[in-house]
Amino acid sequence: MTAIDQPPGLRARADRGADGRDVIPLREATRTWFAISWQTFGGPAGQIAVMQRALVEDKRWIGQQRFNHALSYCMLLPGPEAQQLAIYTGWLLNGTRGGLIAGTLFVLPGVLTLLALSALYVAFGSTSAVTGVFAGLAPAVVAIVVQAVSRVAKRSLTHPLLITLAAVSFAALALFSVPFPAVIAGAALAGWLIARYKPVALKPSAGHGADDGPAPLIPDDALHHEAPSRRRTWRILAIGLLLWAVPVAAVAVLTGTGSVFTTQGVFFSGTALVTFGGAYAVLAFVAQQAVQTYGWLSAKDMVSGLALAETTPGPLIMVVQFVAFLGAYHHPGNLDPWAAALLGALLTTWVTFVPCFLFIFLGAPYIERLRGNRRISAALTGITAAVVGVIANLALYFAEHALFTTVDDKTLGPLTLALPDPTTLRPTALAISVIAALLIFKLRWSVLRTLGICAALGLGAALVGLPGI
Image (cartoon, rainbow, N blue to C red; front, side):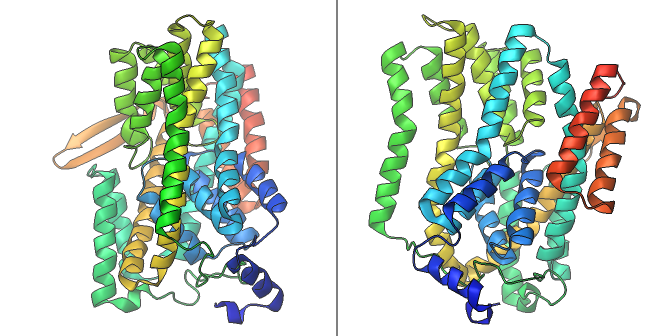
């Protein structure tokens, strides 16, 4: 639906956005991003599902095609794609201020929660009650992610060729361990080929993948007011690099180039640039370096940190904050260990997420203009179809690790299968997952309400000592 077809009230608000003013009041957008930020459990699949539901379906602030276009771009970038999608969408709604607010709020609950859990872990070595709460959330997210796959597939896979592309992408990741960048590159090529030889496959079909309900405030065919320019690009690049580098340079000057803080700042700045395909693609390398090379924490600590990060809101890459917290606590130099731990954690968080803002503010204006380029749009449509397979693969991974204690990798010729050990099924986690599915699919409860109930169930199960939690 074009801006001309919109009801007068919606068209006026969309026009104000095109003129450079906020599509919606910044205060209202901030409240919404704050609410979303506390629902970002379950990794990228769950986080994308929350934004899909809130921004595309409930509030109708952005159209499905526009949302998919932004998501496709974010999937190409290193770093947490869900947070980058929040920055992009916040920028569409409220410009640079909106992007900064959306991206910051998206990670803030996770930063605060993981700081508290890290302190508890160091101080007491056990977080059974708190872990029980989050252990109740993990199986609930399985149901939320399944809902996400269903909804995104329904709206994005509008032709059998796109369905096939999503299935192939899922199989490539889940069965053949094809590198994520190769899957995305192949999907882009497939989208281009489909547009050339079967262009009808890329046209939205009525009743399948089409938006229902009122027209979105940001129409799919409207351009953002902030046009790309060489001057803007250099300004954003200079400011972004300065903000990224200054804290690292400051700790190098104040604590020495050989201090744990300087080492962590440089190391995690580097990992922020190579996290293509999500956190799992780089965490093995991080664990190896943190445990074996730098001795910041033990292998047991690393596993505990990953478990805590899996069940806190925000991107999974937040686990690097836990790694830095323990590393700085164990190697504080001349500082108090607790002050060192806080400094290391915050510095690492800063250098991990600042690049996300830089990538979006640099690239989004260009990506917006490329929506009119048929070849680029076709490639991004192919990526969008592949994203459905990617989310389905993440859903499978999360379900296996939430419901089973042990998951073993089995190799059979070219196949690499992650098979859970059925004897390690967590019965309590399975029960909570079933309850969550009933609440979401049968009773149509909100995500936040469902998570609250499941958190209480997890806490109760931990307190009474039920197995499998």
